[in-house]
Image (cartoon, rainbow, N blue to C red; front, side, top):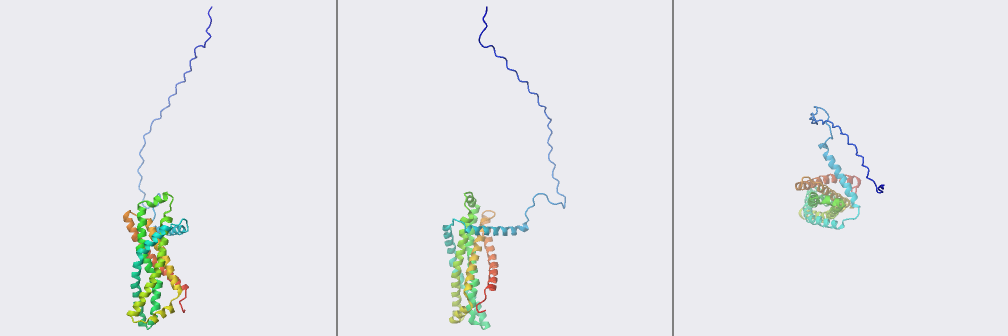
Length: 307
């Protein structure tokens, strides 16, 4: 008698999975090359985005300039203020404009005094030479001399400095680090030009008046008493106010135009030189136009002395 085994029996065979059904292959269709685009028919409207009109480029540049002016004006009241940069730029602009301004104001006042003295002598009103020449120096000559010197010496240096920083991509690096180039570099330069213009205008007014007095009394035989009497009879304090106000406005324009052209050079180093020339020319044109507007408004608002 045999005893059946008590251990586990042989394992049952695993079921074999069915073979996958073959996937039917779709025949490949050769790609046909795209048909060449036919040229537009004559007179048909152009398709796609229109390129900007070149005739509107001056308007776009004017809009960018006024937008930049508004941005600088807002950044003036933003903190922190770059006081050290402001002092450095003030000293630099003053150092390159004080001596030329003094040397230009003397012959300028002399020419005005000689011309006005000759004209008043022909009209028989030689006693009014002092007042007429001093008013011409204070109201017109002094602010314009300041503006031209700042635009030609200080403004060109500001434009060249900012332009060289722009083509070296320093301003892009400042923006990446979260530093505003307008607040860090432009605002101190604009305020420095305004302060230098304000102070230089007073110096040129004094030097030009003394030069006119010397040439009128010494070279044309005028009397000191008549020169000073006519000055006090025709001039008034608002004449000095409008002169200083013009100097502030002209300094602001010179700084803004120089900074705007310096931040937007074209064509590498050559573009920086072109931007400097453009800044000086544009500043001169704006100065004479703004001077005409301010003078016309002043003569209509402020009555003449004794009128």
